Length: 301
Length: 182
Image (cartoon, rainbow over all chains, first blue to last red; front, side):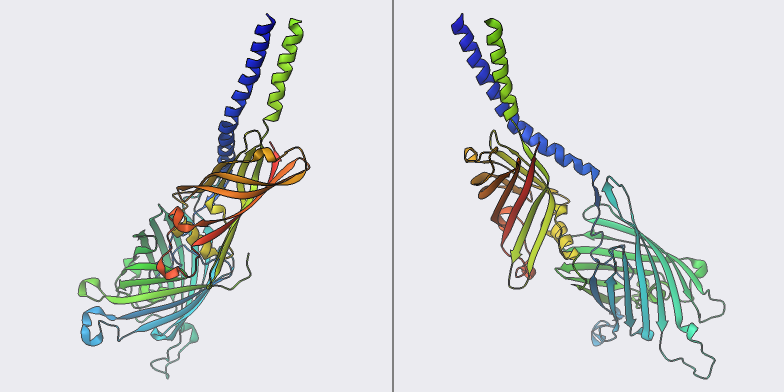
């Protein structure tokens, strides 16, 4: 009897140790998994919807980071169909140099100057909503961009009563964007443009347009971009067309190179949305590029 | 007599339960550093989850890649989008054992040099690693520290030629976790 008791006691002892050993490894992994599940309490914000703050001509939903300076150099060339003599339009270059700066991660400002009509431009971009998933679910990123452009080219007729205000144009746009997947992002850009001076009396000072654009990543660092602005026919200016642009983004560390073909030669909202004179079906295709280089200048956060 | 034996057995088997304790942290610090002539890159994650079970010496870590914070926002973006592909592989983890855990007395304050061996999974690639570590027991709390190097190519993290000079082929990883008894 005693012998049996001793054996059963030893057996219980061993058995209990065994169980705990198995429990430990299994429970270790399950503890980790359970703790990680608490990431459902965390909101994951979508990043890198587009590679830079411009899609092609127009703004994207992206902002530059806080304390980051983004130097932008853009060129738009002449007509590709002009052939080899004009080096496919390269001889007729129009340029914009600009500086964008991130004040906070949701607010950025930018200034620039274009050689076309010697125009100075400035803008503020405010991110109102950020796409996210997890605890806080937001399906879109929403930004608001008011811009101002000032033409400084000399008036054609200095004897006419020319006002400074005639040089100004404004635009207000909302950009509604969504990163559908790692590779695909789309955005809608309803925009309102006001120009103080128009060419013909019957033309509207106020122009409404809606843009649509997107990008499809072809590899980790290269994407295909497209952008189209539809101007409401009632507000469309005489002799202008809707802007259509297609191109590629190539990102290399601190630079983003955007190479594209477009029927717009302007580089501020009024010129490329409301004043596009080229027509794709007539072969008015202009090659252009944007180069973006970021520098972190603000204090580290 | 039978009752006494029964009680004895019950007590002895019960005491086993008390010893199977774990130590847990949800704010472990994991950082990494890359040094090249052109630039240095470093980032810190202060939300690593880790568990140690002294009974078996098992130790495990799990960390969210998006939790690594950089000084430069664009660097953090590229780290996630281009290098770690965190949308596809959101976590990095380590599962292994403290091979000489018997050296460590979890009930006595002290500093113990140990060896940790196990599987390190980064970018969906697992490699066996053996890392020297230091476990410090103080006032019922445990902390673990380790510094070790990994090669990017071992985890299929590719660096384009154009930025090869900016990112070191070998990255130094530092682990600094303070555990509480669970």
